[in-house]
Amino acid sequence: MPTVVRMPEVLANATEAVIQSWLVTEGQEIKVGDALAEVETEKAVVELAAEVAGVLGRLIAEPGATIAVGDPIAIVLAPGESDADLDANPPADPTPNTPDADSDLEVDATAADPDSGAPVLEAASQRESAPVRAAANQQTAEPEPEAPPAVSPDTNGTRLFATPLVRKLAGERNIDLATVTGTGPGGRIVRRDLDRLAVVETAAVAPAAQTPKPAPAAAPVAAADGFTDEPLTGMRKAIARRLTESKTTVPHFYVKADCRVDALMELRRSVNEAAAVKVSLNDFVLKAAAGALVEVPEANSIWNDTSIRRFDNVDLAVAVAVDGGLLTPVLRGVDRMSLSIVATTVADLAQRAREGRLKQAELEGGSFSVSNLGMYGVSEFSAILNPPQSGILAVGGAAPRPVVVDGELATATVMTVTLSADHRVIDGAVAAQWMAAFVRRIENPLTILI
Figure (cartoon, rainbow, N blue to C red):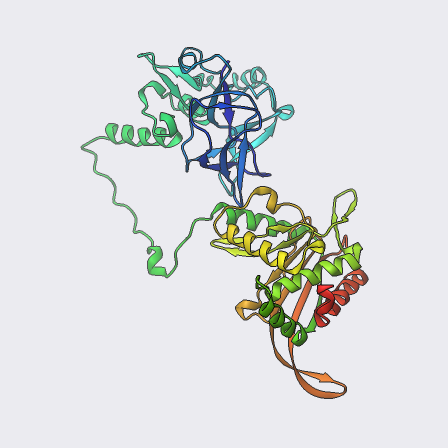
């Protein structure tokens, strides 16, 4: 039997994703685990692996298409089957009231997230059965027309592809899908086709002699008011959701310190004169933060609801500004990396982040983040935690400031850093110990190289 490949929920709470590119072609033999496509989520590009072996019979979704979670994107033929078998024996598509056997969740097309308009997943155990709903509605309303199947023949014997949402809307509007021309990938009927049909029918039945009432005076256009509404991207929605959750549910507290970095900047100049790989001030900061986490292991932890998870290795997330948002790729085992490897790895992750080529695994994990705005002329700031991480270090710019040395006024290059900590995991004394260990390494930079 042919198998329908559906868009998986590649990212927690995601409702849709984009097929960036197909890595296979129709007619190609595939094995379990083979990469079928690159799927772009809110923050990363994920490879979609095959879960069944066979021959790729048909690609339903085109590259660049935005597909809802659960919608079909391809069809895999079993060994020995051909494309002709696919037309003669199309794979069954469960109706909206019949969840997949492999899942206890289904998409309720009538319930949508008020912010994103995306379908809401509803637990099968919490749904009323179709007969119960029908019995309850018989008292007050006529039964709804039965929705046509996902793949149904029209009068000419051809096959129609339509999403469950389209089938439901077509039933509600008494639309025969055989009369609708699909404009989606592979000729699939999508919602805009039904909406377009409704507009055409409304125009056709409108009385020609009826004089429309004059419209009320329109409000001033947005341009006249001096603003433009820019639609939210998936990344911006994810950032808003995550940071709102963090700021409202995680008890933040802050520890600030001033670091004298004259010796560090002199060491950096010496290193860059001799090394093939140029290192930045931020690379030293990452190594100093990793060393402080090794010295104060209580800070190398995350909140885990029922426990506090402490890590043996130091994995640090680095904030990278990209068009339209911010990404935090994770460096693994920073405590064991040399300074040059840190510099090379950060440069690679930052480049791929800006090009949208990060993998999902590169955005997961870590107990701690570093966010540096010093290159923008920022003197100091406080950052919001990235749950479930327990700390984030906000790094300001290094600049000459007056300091007191041996009781006398002098000038030094000073960098202000602010630690935002999750008080559920890190107590005030632990945060102070970590900050002291970090400052000690920054002001004695040879300890970073040892």
